[in-house]
Length: 476
RNA sequence: GCCAAGGUGGCAGAAUGGUUAAUGCGACGGACUGCAGAUCCGUUUCCUGGGGGUUCGAUUCCCUCCCUUGGCUCCA
Image 1: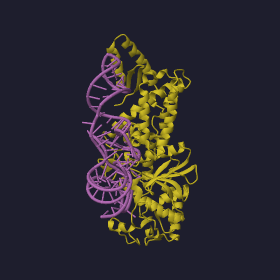
Image 2: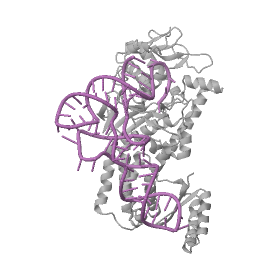
Image 3: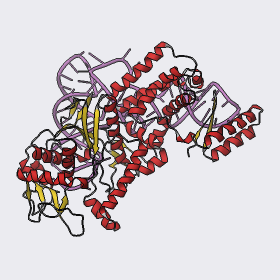
Image 4: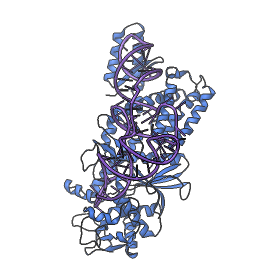
């Protein structure tokens, strides 16, 4: 399989350092506010990456940090008169809830920055010992960019070019304007921890490198995030970790996802053009949202139009989900031993070949869009047989279903579990359907339509086809 | 200004040094249906930002220009 490596700026064949183990780190949130649809994209993409790698036999240890103490958290907490750590906790729990709904369950561990103070202090001390960092007059500690020759390689930036950019703040505490803080001296009223250099709190970049060094080691396989973090954050991670440990490279493969765009701009809180992740899940459902994300190359910018994008994604998704759901329904009801027609041999082979092709397609830098196109092809091929689907044997249905099960495993689409059909509805609705069928049989369409309308009003949609009447949760 | 990522049909978005450039959405026509929905079939001519170059052949590789977005020490 190949992965597009941002450091090499080219696709590279993936080879973990110690197969079959894969260390994967993805930059997580700074939970000072609710997550938006743009955040969802990255985390769904890397969920797919982890799922795929595991399917292909790798043992992935997936770590995603939580920057629970940071300027933004502190500022927001002050505004709301809330404890900063309580605020980030609250938003992180809400984030986890969204992830659970989205089926993002591949992360092994979400380390909190504040749980790694010993590691952070140790790394800062190493940097000072190696003279890569220095203590400022106020007790802050800065990393000296000049001490790391490789600085700028990932982003293509030249250190000299940063200075005329004029957005690097001149600061008397720094030896050079491009230096960045790794330990911030305490400000009264803000969270602080003891350190050899006085009370303070960790800078942003060093949290990640202290955590990965502890959990994944001085060198690891895969680092992912959206591309807006390349500079300065990932550049700083490389400089810090490699300077502290003396080992390189920190990361073997860098993956950067494209941004989610809204009205031609990056969706971001600072621009205010955000669409809430939880709200999008509420309105369209997790599967449609996942489909929307994975229906584009992960590296491309993706346009989000609050009115159109998810509506379109829903139409497309349901085109696949309906037949997939129908097959799953039959199998759930009758089991795989159900009797019926077998598939012709050639189609049996086609099912197996398609699953292989799906793996192959995805192994080309996680080309989920191409994989989805293959699923459409498969669906189109079989959907003309749908009304007669119930004639097939369990084994035949299983073969028809295999590509959708692949998609469930790797893309998280077409989940078999369907809660809308359970509960009281499952007993009531079929009774109503039978009553309506009797009305239709005697030509009493007024009564038949009345039953359908009443169910509709109660949130249940009926559909007739050659095999009878099906029902599902109605959508608005 | 510097660095990076992009520019493909009405829209969203793939791919490839080579027959008619995926797939989906939308639109239109038809089949099916008591109706609705879903589904199926068909149509959707004109799409690879501009200009050079390499090549038998370029949308793909190279150069250059234009445009959009991101980053340039808060950002998924």
